[in-house]
Length: 231
Image (cartoon, rainbow, N blue to C red):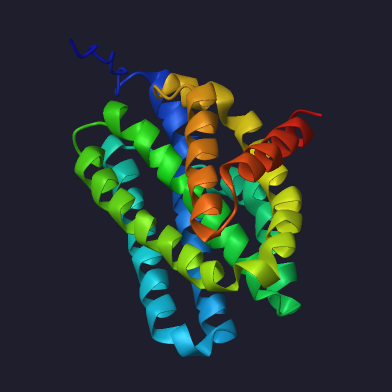
């Protein structure tokens, strides 16, 4: 028997306030992903057309999620979202300016996209009727974005493996740290933070295995990263 999921009260003041922050995080995150993929298109000119397409998809996602907020009569807390994204965005820009394509791909295509996939999977069962089909379509797109990074890194695995691990050590604790500020809001809209972290870790591990890491090495790296994030 399938358990019935208790849906939140979408009209309550508490829900709408929490949603204003979560919606802003999604909008800002998708907007930054648009920018990141456009920067990657310059760094990987042979794949520029594909990367521009991925960027356009992210921009469309941002607009779609703006519509979700409008539907609920919510004004997204964009300033807060931008401030929370600053550390992770700064890591990407630093790598981009240094011409470090590996770090750029790890941050955007593996870490950010794994978080997006995890977040949308967790949100989908508790989304309102307007947001649910939009979220389902976006989820399909994010899997494609994740695959691009995996496909680029996989044939270069032997030469980039240590760079990938080094970048993960810098960026994953930053990404996990963003959740700390949002835990109460996630609970309010029906997402258990511990389940979101677990879904992210599972998705991220799948990506690491897909590019060439052994499952045992993945578990070791993720255990270390989780410990650093909680330190």
